[in-house]
Length: 420
Ligand SMILES: [Zn+2]
Ligand SMILES: [Zn+2]
Image 1 (cartoon, rainbow, N blue to C red):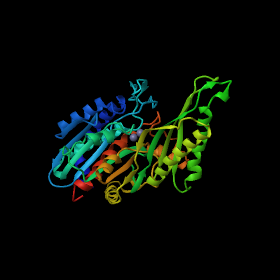
Image 2 (cartoon, helix red, strand yellow):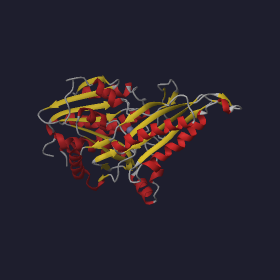
Image 3 (cartoon, protein in one colour):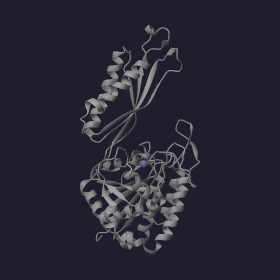
């Protein structure tokens, strides 16, 4: 067993009870992306008490905690802190009833429907075990509590604020996410493990007119409808069937009234790809089709493209993943497994490693009641289990809390405990 997990020892029940309280408190008090003021204060204060050198407000609300403990590698652990603009519908006694103003000033429900509250709790627990068992490891520990993962702003803003020489360059960066899967299990994958995600807003310009006189208009509704259909042919007709890709148009807006032909229409789309080549190809195809459809309609202006957000591929380092997999095998036995395929979900976690040229590993921790998950698997209804971003998503606290804590300690220990 990993010495850090062993170090949990007799103190485990007390630590777990404390972490459960922290988790429920964070769950009840979610904060929107880049507004994680309360969460950041809770973790920064806790880390200071543990003896970490704490720097606040790195990338708006991010927190970086350093602990130097003798010779050895510099290991960076990352947890994201933000919640989503949606109302929670789990019926749990500790469910969120919080509302807040989003960046557009609109009042929205706020909920930890992606489980980042669990990530923060795991990290505080791991930080506690590491700080109180310094004889069990050696090296430099750097813990990053990151804001704004859900808007792809957080990692970028932390990297921008990182500053020269303020923090050491890590040798490895580790992160984890709770998702649908039997609680008590972990899964990992070398190489591409999460898709790249790109969201675009596309404005198509027509010429407004009276609905009774279409000959005096350039109808952006027709333009948007044709563009929407044609964009669906990128994945179905231009990408090889063996190459996974997704293109979803989640928003299509034009006009106000049935007898007014509007001036313009707006499409918002999201795409997911699993290779850089496919990503670039699809971005080019989207432009080609939008421009050609506008031209086909006789538009007097080309369409306008705005990036809403962009998540790079999460591509785990092969050697480092092997190291994590080996450690997980020792710790979790058959409860650690190789993920059969990359997940069609995206993260900004890789931005740290990509920017600095540092290897990284990101893995998954199951959060579903194990019996319910086994039953769903048998009945082939896994897709019906509320997933991340569902208003009904909430991990089962035990053993998810223990497993994520152990996973983080086990992976960190693969670098920090040379004899492990
Ligand atoms: Zn999410
Ligand atoms: Zn997430």
